Amino acid sequence: MRGRRARVLVGLVIVMLMGTAVYLRLWTIDYTVSSADTELLRRQFDLANREAMDESAEWRLKYDKQVERVTKCAQELNKVKESFEKQVKDPANINQKIVMLQKENKALLERIKVLNQQLEAQKMKCSS
Image (tube, rainbow, N blue to C red):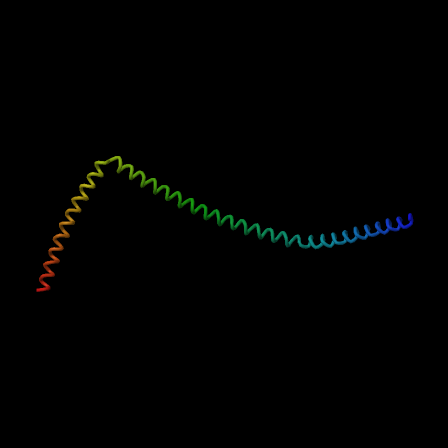
């Protein structure tokens, strides 16, 4: 029994040594492949990094354009607000404009009336 146990133990040690040898061999093969691929990986990383930087710059440009548009719109809105506030503060000015527009409206209505009469007169001439 002791001899059999020793053989099993020796067999186990031999299998472990062979497994370690195979592992080391695979590791060295993988290491040589990875050291050969290091340059390729570095180039791919550089390319991906450049693409990311380009995309980042593109998004930054879009952001800057939007900020510029928003700033311009905000300035225009402030101008309109100020103009409206000035008009609201001066109701007499608004009343004057309303009176002037009403007079202009009356004058235009009279002009339309005259033009309709002239049109009717022309129609009468044509039909007779």
